[in-house]
Image 1 (tube, helix red, strand yellow):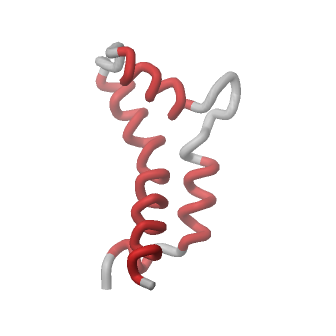
Image 2 (cartoon, rainbow, N blue to C red; image 1 turned 180 degrees about the vertical axis):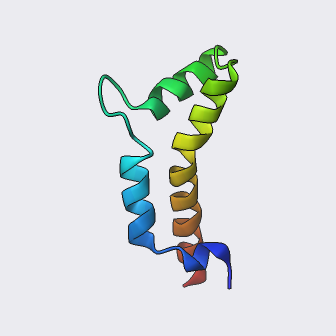
Length: 72
């Protein structure tokens, strides 16, 4: 059984909406870090780690949804 198959979909949704978007004010970190990535200013190790931390729930959710879509 795949690692993605073992993860509950509702847990991934909650993780993406909480950790993936935290902090909510003034803007989600994922938005800030993606903006930095596309503008070429994402260079500090802490910023790269922060992008990975906030992007992981979204990437897992997309992978799980893709697996569900292709499985049935």
